[in-house]
Image 1 (cartoon, one colour):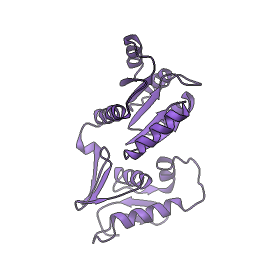
Image 2 (image 1 turned 120 degrees about the vertical axis):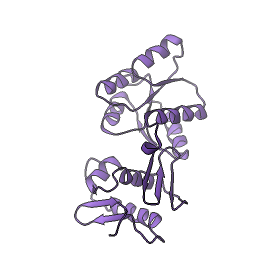
Image 3 (image 1 turned 180 degrees about the horizontal axis):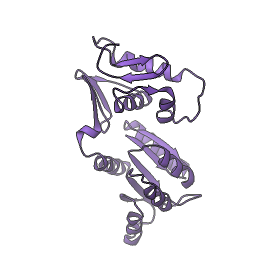
Image 4 (image 1 turned 30 degrees about the horizontal axis):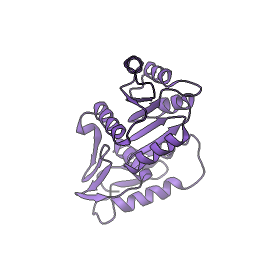
Amino acid sequence: MRILIIEDDREAAAYLTKALTEAGHVADHAADGESGYAMARDNDYDVLVVDRMLPKRDGLSVIEELRSDGCDSPALILSALGRVDDRVTGLRAGGDDYLTKPYAFSELLARVEVLARRRQPGEAETVYRVADLELDRLSHTVTRDGAPIVLQPREFRLLEFLMKHAGKVVTRTMLLEKVWDYHFDPQTNVIDVHVSRLRAKIDKGFERPLLHTVRGAGYVIRDGAR
């Protein structure tokens, strides 16, 4: 899963980012309401974890404006305010769940996973398949012909994006924006390096290559000859 944490407490944010990453997910962080709103608006996150009290813009107004913009990413509100009225206010603002601080990470993780399943209830939406290559977004696993493939977080994110657009050419600009969150060209070979590593992991030893380079255009995941 790709998760956005909007939290101004640096220690809390660092702990949560580390814990979610160790659980096999991709976690981005925004330190205030304004940047959190912009990141959630411009990217497709599976779940938003939003602190209620934030600088520049409070968490509830962030969620409210995202909902008015058409953003349907589920939002888990974190707050030290735990009265019934506080929870009701948060849910009516557009939040999908409400967790009172302090919390146990195991409970937060379980709630995040439930929210992700609600958004994409069918296997067809959470599991991508191309030939015998399979990627499960919820369990964060990849297999080919039933054999597990271990990917680094960025490699998983790259493969996920390619498989989401299977059969279509994905440009370098699309990868920079959606996988690396770059809105400029860093003038490096970072994409080539990661694609090469990914190709070695998913295609090496198999008769049919699935990851193809389209010269002058980009890359494509498809079942077929080069």
